[in-house]
Image 1 (cartoon, one colour):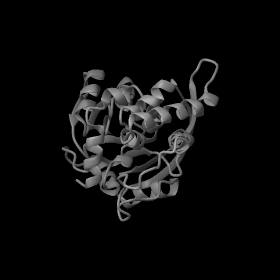
Image 2 (spheres, one colour; image 1 turned 135 degrees about the horizontal axis):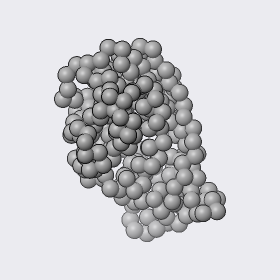
Image 3 (cartoon, helix red, strand yellow; image 1 turned 120 degrees about the horizontal axis):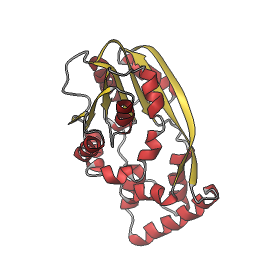
Length: 268
């Protein structure tokens, strides 16, 4: 484990409910494409790494797949266990998962590789757990960030809140380019073959209060920044947030945020 991993564990502690009410719907969009990428079928055994509140695991279970799901955060494990009582749901942390080699017909990780201190080791562990010929797939957010994520930087800048320079980052020797080419290369270096990476585009539609509630509850880098502010500054940030999202609301008051993600897959 690294200091980056320690930071992630602290930031996500007890956050299952806050995540489910804010950013879970955003992260849910690629779930079907992720399962399609590993070509998992009914009756096969799938490992969902970093399951969160169980979105991908639940979709796989609905397709008749035998689901094993793991997450480092106990509140996420509990949430997924309640959501899919018949699945095997365990607490476990990349890059050291408690399973033998070659035990799964497919392995997926939805927005997990961007939350680990050693991405190459994490993908390598996923490859270890997939049987020979099985597929492994993962999603991450790209850099430059899509509009949905850039909104927070825009709001903080408008409110006069400086983006701190001490936000946790991976050391250069463990990081990788968050581009389609860079993500594909990470999978190849981890030992996967037949690697492909695509960019998914969609407009995330959500209640503006739900989108605010994620950072307001301390989730993600925007949450860390917001928690460092005094009450008056938080109120100013909220005023600028309301101003910036107003043009993005539809007739029903729903927020429409263009976004994208990278989905990479390869064969073990």
